[in-house]
Length: 330
Image (cartoon, rainbow, N blue to C red; front, side, top):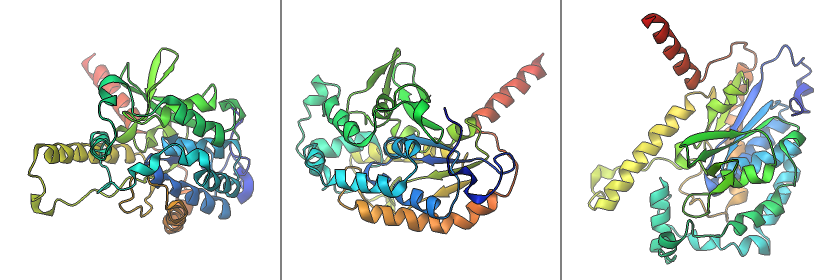
């Protein structure tokens, strides 16, 4: 790993005297196009990024950016790919007409199946799509490089289905790591790697801010592109077992997201509306929304960069508590 961002000294301050900023790019499918707007504002404002943590779409954008911190070039490549025949052949267009934004994986898969996808696939296969679909995306969007080639320290988050644990990948080839992080359960097959079976963290860890702290970040800026939690409307719509199940799963997803976000010093929330995860038709608009949300957060970010304390992650707090408990027993 090559240290930190080549733009680290744009502010004219020594690496030893300023705080390290960790940028966490969360998952959310097409809503993650807002990450490109976030990165654009950081570049234009000369705010150094010392490390990037990406999960799902955040990994797909954060990985290439860590290799070559040039947001305009990344935007051009991404938008060109979304207009290409290669992208159209993937077939995500069929998902665009979901009647509401998904709040959990079960609902996402159910809505897709209900709209005509062969549900028998999920009874006989591990996913609706073949692994080659995502492999083709990565060949077109991510250079064939390793973590040793990055200019900004990078971690890619995924979940190991075997051990049931989150994994922060920081070494090896980039493409397999990103492939694991974007392999949405039910839609794409998990990735085998070093005895692990890796998949998209999804709503279990849409914004893994604690990983940035563990990497040494003093200021953690997280970008949350999750859809807004839907209102209950007096409970009138919760009349079937499936609707109640979806609601309970949504509440659990919301609670987990809030826990993970507690490790953030600044949370950037672009106004992503009710955009469905597979609808990339408004990519340019999402970029603009990412820029707008980041501009609103700039005063807080700049203020925090002038402070010197480092917070502990919730995992570190837990470890410290368990240690003190053991010492008290002894």
